[in-house]
Image 1 (cartoon, rainbow, N blue to C red):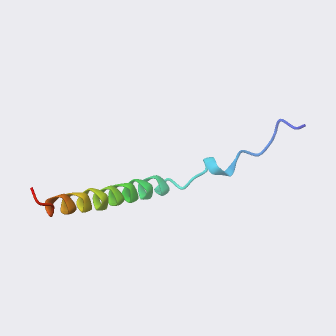
Image 2: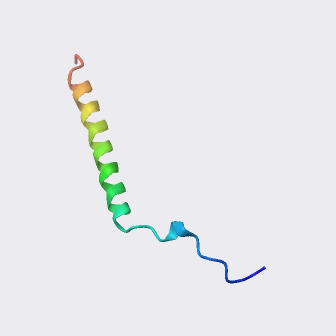
Length: 45
């Protein structure tokens, strides 16, 4: 039982992954909200 266990590799993420995830979330939310607005605008009032 050694205390010198290697650190998990998941912590050494590429810092650009976070910005790519943020851009993807914004894109998905824009598509969802845009689709919802388009759908609701087409409904009779």
